[in-house]
Image 1: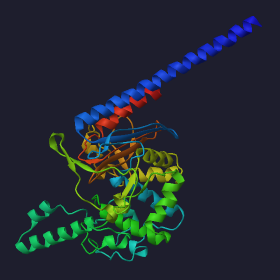
Image 2: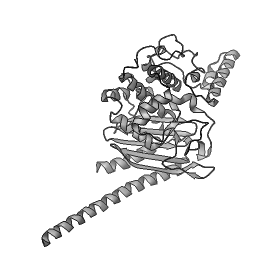
Image 3: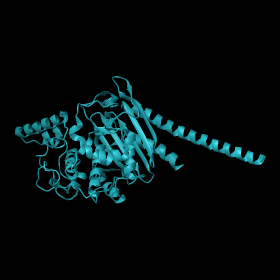
Image 4: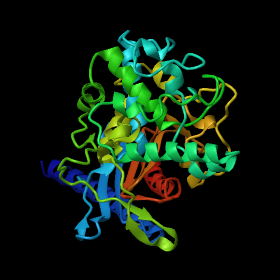
Length: 399
């Protein structure tokens, strides 16, 4: 009996020792992330960072640093809501492919079968082309570039007028999708659909209209039913500029020399399917985990969505920089970006918008998901900072 008790207490001692060791390791890597976050705040000048990390089907880290509201000295928390910017496109694309699985949406039929308010163009446009950024529908007007192409004063006047119309749309509050198409729906397409690639939030606004026609539901209701509720994304909502939304972050613009000013005024309701939501880093991780785990559709669909649409397009092999966070022909599938990481395959999406920068990605082979949100446009830490976090997490998990 005495020997048994000795062995019993020895086993408990070993167990407690192992537990203490694991606690120390966990505390160490969390401290390392905190140090990296504080360093990024100091080096970049961005007001705040909200970070969430997922492993398999759990969130293993969530924390916020800095100020959600500089003027009122409000600290950022894990419940602070930031603008998603273009990450919303991944959700819209996911809803589209769910409707395809349900037999409600044919990707290769003309979009007028579902969205009557968008006029026919010189060539038919399909939902597949909207999804893959190959529709030819224009993006935001780059006024200086357009004016440089003008051949006479009449052309210049026309371009200036188009810009005024577009600016008006960014200050207008929309409650329905169809009116938000009016500012560009009569414009000619840039190329024959399916023959080239051009990143366009306007195309995803049209896609939102297509989803409404295919489902018989408003986009707002559809995205909640198909994406937010099944994934328990309880802190994600429309970015309604008129509503009182608790924990909404104030938006800023990061200038050169790390100076910060208020963000440009922007009502993003016109852009809802392409980038008009508020969310948290933890909710983004929940979504990416569900996507990667096949909770929305089959692995075949996941592969389709995360593969560059053009067969001859190869993932860039160059050393990733912050520009790797910008969508491109070589890295874009069906609302999903690939990142040019020579070591770990990553898929996800980034976003840049007035008062916000965002990123979420998953590493399928390691089942790791990382999301970072900040309340400033002009932050360039998409790749360098998230890579630093990734290195810390992978080192722990691989060991």
